[in-house]
Structure formats: structure tokens, C-alpha cells
Length: 111
Image 1 (cartoon, helix red, strand yellow):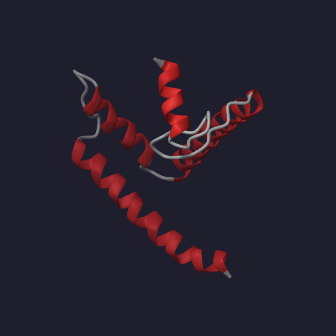
Image 2 (image 1 turned 45 degrees about the vertical axis):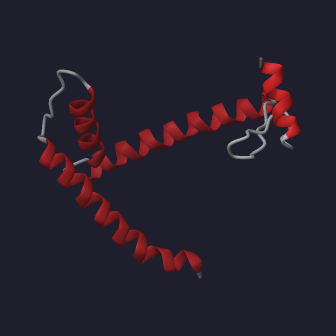
């Protein structure tokens, strides 16, 4: 069954590690996979550090509100500590502020 599928992909012009839906060739080398794991770990560390910085600087941490509303929405008996309206308001307000800051800073980056 698998070999038939592989053969039909090859007849369609796809290589071994290329998916039929996207046509993107994937690497499966051990070094590439180790690199992906390293990037994911580093990204998680950056996210955690960023969250701590925001928590220290801001009175209301948008990431805490995000976790709060996700907990309320995903858990069967979950509830929001701050209320869904406040969670959404903080997230939307934070997004508006961050977009304004990014729009202000972006022209400096482009120059």
C-alpha cells in the first residue's frame, strides 16, 4: 500500500520527501531535525523571557490573560479568573498598542 502510494507520487513528478499537497521538499537528515529542536527550545526560552519582562513592566500581562481565557475555553470545568470580557479586552488592547508601536518603528527599520 505504501509503495503504491510512493510510486503514484513519483509518477506525478514528486520526489521522495516531497508532499503531494504542497510540493515542498522536506529534509529528514538528523542534523536538520536537531536544528529544528534547538530552534524550538530557543524560541520557547525567548517567549518565556519576553513574558517575564512584560510581567515585570506592565500592570496587566496580556500573556496571562491569554492563558486565562484559553484555560476557560479548553477545560471542561474551566473558568476565567479575570472574566472573558477583561481577557479579550486586554488582548485586543495590547494588540492595538503593539501594532501602533510596530507601525511607528517599522519605517526606521526599512531605511
